[in-house]
Length: 157
Image (cartoon, rainbow, N blue to C red; front, top):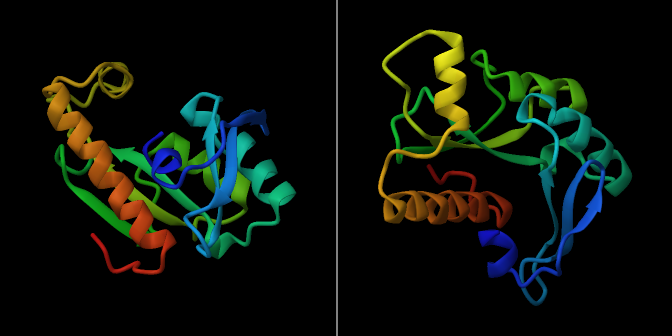
């Protein structure tokens, strides 16, 4: 992933129903653990909760980067807590972490022109319609926002 590459983290290991890479953000930088759950997004709490417990990460040091259909494609917002907005993955994370008060980087992917739950799910799980370069830029900008939160500048949006 982008952050693992930026921080020269080791190859991830398969643990906690996910892929985990641990290290530092740079020489003398804070210790970090990146977790990519290998569950369905709607069950991510079953990966994140046990990982947080085993690694001893306090809730106020947890950062979740996730897609957000309620933001237009390309918009990124960082915040702590807030509503779960019908996002089943966030509901699972609340359950796994025991609280909704975790930091988030919300990555706007836009919303399809329908409210049909099956079509919305297909949209979120499908390929991006935007050009590859725009998607890559969005990933880089989401990584920038996550890095700012991790390194202490939670005012980034």
